[in-house]
Image (cartoon, rainbow, N blue to C red; front, side, top):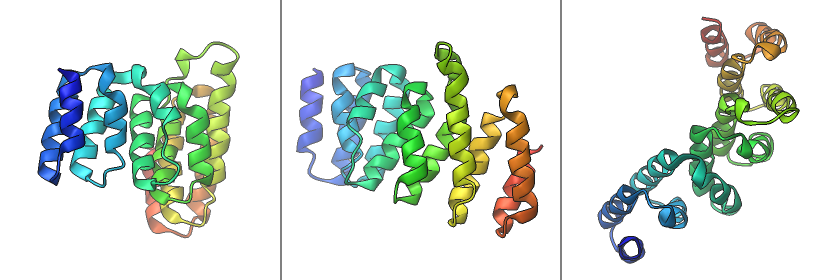
Length: 199
């Protein structure tokens, strides 16, 4: 059954047929569908990619190893969907990938998705000492990119920092950095987002 639905995705010859085929495959919630759903991210069909991302997010932790290992180094649109999906699942196994993507990816959409994801990872799933050191790595990365020349990256860093501030051990350096941004950032939208983080 799943194999037939996977074949239907491969054979879809119009954008609308692709969306329908992906919806049918997504409905199975079969882990055998994971590679095909990930591949859909690279098909330049935003509606189908959104369906695939939702399905993978609902499957949760089972998809994380494949999402990490099959990250698309060439297609930044596909990479952005993968990073957004990993961010939504919030599995801390994605930390290395999110740190790297937030700090170094050339595509702003990928960097923004990674920055938001870094603030929301489920740190409690890690054993000590990783549960202590991993959030600090996220913090270092977010503080680094909060100084980026691209304002939308700084904005995403604020979103990540706000979420990370749920970790009481990190509140002091986070609010120190947000204070600096409130007085020094040249972009009005970024300063407004910092103010929202304080509410």
